Image (cartoon, rainbow, N blue to C red):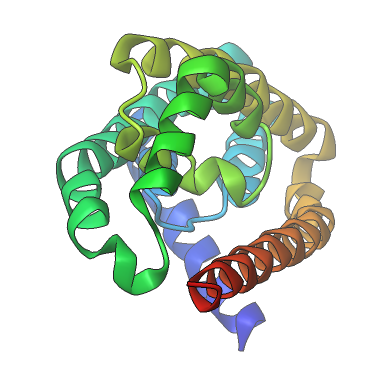
Length: 206
């Protein structure tokens, strides 16, 4: 089932980039960065493959990908800022999110938000969703934009470069990234279980 979904997504990505060129690269990465899990391990390696055919340039696709990341991330950031924050403050208690948790998130992004955003852009899964909590925590917007671009550019360049080197075998990269997706997904799930258990224990003690 998962393989079929990935195959459909790959066909959509390939068709969009083939039709729209650099704009297609930017659009696909924008969608991927707006909390919609469109796999970047297909978008950028395929773009790199087109570099090997002479259709694109390596820096051209890297910049297009990074710009797309910024566009999609900004959209997710503002959703978190204007929509997620009020909802978290009003309804968070129903999903075990307290005002204290929001204060912790605010303090974290105030102190470490720049580096958190920068390094998360190089990590599968996390890179797709980091913008929403950054917006909810109301991280400085221009710093968010700058570190999103700075973190996305080397990531996009690297994936495109690997795709260029792999040539016709560009799609084999997705197999390795899928393993990282599973590992990071397990870590996130474990953190979520710990969060729920901790808050339930605190609630039961009152």
